[in-house]
Figure 1 (tube, helix red, strand yellow):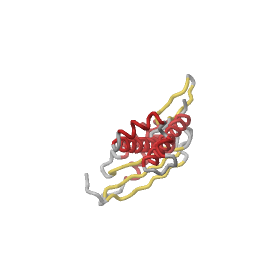
Figure 2 (cartoon, rainbow, N blue to C red):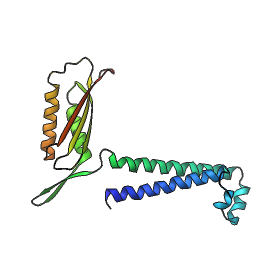
Figure 3 (cartoon, rainbow, N blue to C red):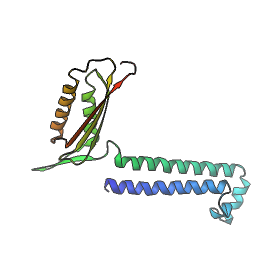
Figure 4 (cartoon, one colour):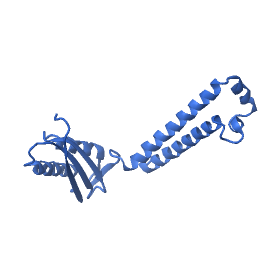
Length: 184
């Protein structure tokens, strides 16, 4: 199953869970015409009424949990389409294809960038296609540090990254911010 098909499947499941949770909550709050008869047949309504008020409370809890599970799945699956760490870079070769996990490569570049004590944090996003991907880098530099040589450090880290990937970025965007938090 492809990543897109997987996301579509779980998005549908999440939407169904949200709809189920919303329906159960609507019945519990008396907002649905027909009341509990919509969800429960005559055989189940009697035990449900005997369990009052705990039956309604249990139904509300089930509805909230189903809705929350659906929302969590929606957030996870829709975020996966644009999120970090999903996908692979595939390089065709003479004897087959080499696959590199994009998330592992991104984390490696972030570690390489933060190897300089002047850089507190680094956030890297990789987009585009493997022959010429786009690379978006944001570094947070400690306040009050000398920035001489910092550009060279970032350039050499990007060169090492490109050599590891086996391709050069089509677009490279580096943004540096001064972090005024406590030093590490």
